[in-house]
Image (cartoon, rainbow, N blue to C red):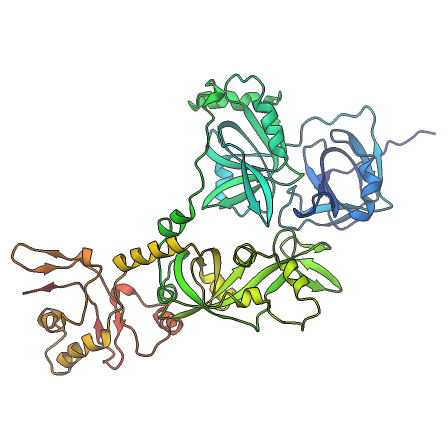
Length: 544
């Protein structure tokens, strides 16, 4: 009887329309998935396999089946796999670009193939230009190869109340430079290599790295337990890469001693006094541009009909309760281990206007010095919905807020701004007030100033600012004072600029809605004036 050789399917052909798939693949990477708070308690195991064509697919093994497969799988070996499940490859960070992923269960068969070799490391290298085009918002883990040019000293940072090791590395390829952040135990691999004798700048490959956005700079970082670093690998790809750098006039024969300390993060004083524009709450509502801004305000109220905490997935996003199980939409998976986090809604006031701000976990922790779990323990036995005393004590406190303003968030959070960082330092607050006093114009009383202009128009005299400016000079202030210069003949000459005219008794939000769709270059329509009457205010010359 002639034995018919078993046929195997290609990874590229896998879809969700059948169940009797057979694969012969090489295990490229296997790691345990866990949350930062409990690194020794994994909730699943994840793997990446590659076939003879170089196609990759990821596999997820739930916690109840981890023991069965953890003992029989070794990276670099080839296996024959049958009786596995196929599902859509969702999730926030995907280790392979395939539309589907596999899941192992109790009936899955994994058999080692002796004497079978599948070449390659399963690399899917991308260039600096491709990473930067993502704007830091890629759902796929990437493989990157570059020469190491700059390395920071090892730093210790606080993440969610835990001390974490961090090292920042600059990697260069033929398309430019990219920053790589290395966290945790992977730093040990890096330090062991740096301790060896070096001959020129080393080539580094980081596999399964996450694309991120840090201070508006697109970069990459390692993923806990998943990422892998290769130093000067003896493969054709690395040799060709180093040769290509010579063509692009990138020097790689310099000593590794050129690696120096990286620039430190900005201080709290610089962050709140120099790096971001200063705004009032009223200006926030008026602005069209998006970005980060500094606001000084006092917390006037805690919104008590808004829940002050939420349950979060390991990705720090909230989870929903669906069919008796918690589900994370960002990760597209069921969640069994969650962390409680702060989400406190505040009403703040800057003396003129009010706004709603959202205070998130880390900033709330810095203000109350207690985790949300400790708060719940303190409230045990108390009525449901009661707010902790430490949070209520925030009312009346003045502080600086670095907030993010975006049209999408204003719609999502119902005209509520997200707090990115807070500062309560008394000295920084005092410096901020001094700067605002020097730089910020006083609020103008347009109603009184332009009553005379409207009267002049009603009398048929026309809208002539040149004839009216002297009479209203005492009521209309040209600010900031630095914009006004004195001429040789005693005249005060102002710079060109424009002012908006506010409706009486109008809230900032109503003012923003009214102003949408209207060009600031054409001015604002005056309340009570004819439909054809517009005022375009220009800094003027005051004749003495």
